[in-house]
Image (cartoon, rainbow, N blue to C red):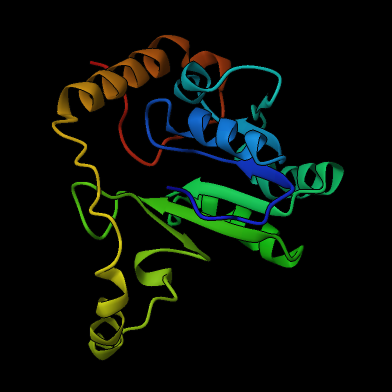
Length: 189
């Protein structure tokens, strides 16, 4: 279940391989938000198509200014991304904060395997989550009333398929995004 993000115009950057961000966009639209998704490589474009998607194909040193212009033109008040340490994401976070836009960061989750973490501002080292374990002990009673999570089951086959499809798309069609450099090796071979 997604929280109420309070966003009227959302910017989605890179998400996990697969349809997760397409589903997030549909949920945001259903809640009345306008959505813009930036695709940085063929894998991004494989999993997110349509009029809400824009391709970034310029040199990476132009990304912060391009991102700022896009946010200003579209009135972006919320940025969504997966992982807050990618260089593109770090720059976008700075641009968003300078404009007062909320930043929502997804991660695989602190409570794996059945959870995805979404925190405002950042995750892991950038998280605003309290570091004092007593805070969590005090809050545990409130969590006892929640329904147990629905187990997601074995997601490895689906995840492997999405990862392989992403790698093949990036390998065969990488020429369409000549300046993009991924934070990991995604070459299919």
